[in-house]
Length: 399
Image 1 (cartoon, rainbow, N blue to C red):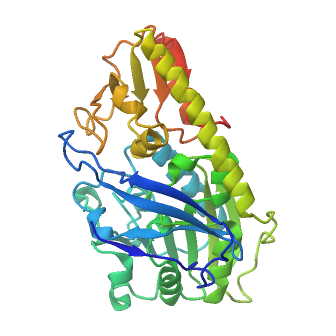
Image 2 (cartoon, helix red, strand yellow):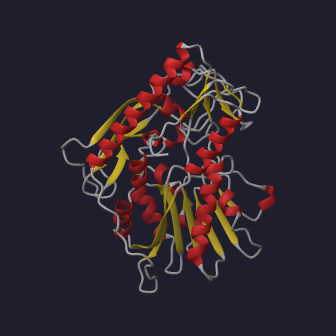
Image 3 (cartoon, helix red, strand yellow):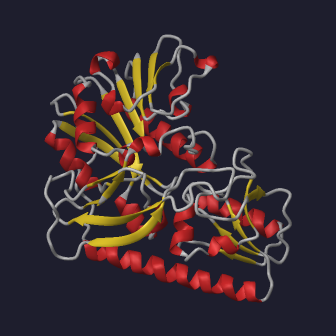
């Protein structure tokens, strides 16, 4: 497994100050992969450090795994496969439309189009649609959508064109090794008329929800509103509006354009309080203490011969298992209803993914494996109550 070291903040291009501003995560597992054999990809992990830049309020990973090792045929994340992803895209779609108004949109480009779920929602006979993604697949029902199967930074601008009316990019920027170049390239294929919409995990939400189980090798950068604004302004971009999306772990939805007198800002920027490393560190310690308590509860029930299940085979479950000292290896099963996951395993976890519907949970201890949002978590809790689970545990504190 190849990786690169990154010691400089991508916003200011400087190494953060020497005082303590990082969190070390030794042998952090790789996620978003599902395998048929529990012995496959054994030890698929890498030492990692989370580094916070006090100048820019930006957080990033020190070690970057080569993208080709992750975004291949084993990559398991699809925009249309989970409720939280679908709902996050619905909210993003509504945010985009509420800001477009009566704009005449003829050409749309989606960068990081995945399975084209969001782009299909913009499908019209008279529209030109382009989806760019290394794992994108064509859809015969939407044959008019042009597909470019490649990483955006490797695609020639001439192939994309500079006449787009709308550029959308949802949950992609956090995966990009060089977001500085990425944003520069986005703005280079834009005109003054081009409306650009991004959605990505919010550092503000991560700290508020103490959701450090969302930090993994694929998410190289954790932008705050202020750090994104800083890098955007460097290349002539201007934020017009923004909003927070509760779904999919909490995200920032941002509408921006090239800086022009024609593009008027709807909301004052930099209204959010400054973030510092003390806040990051305190949130991380609270997160660790909470999981330690949950781990202790599970072990106590296991001593009493109770069955233990993990509910929802979320792509980041190996991270939760890592922070809980491998507790999921003691589970009787990981429960899910996604047929593409049933019978498979996560790398570094010996517990098989089983069918949720056919498993009796009466008197069992259940750990909800992923908390995408309050809405999705309540749905899971209601199902577990109906199936008469005795104890329901959550990996998050702020639910």
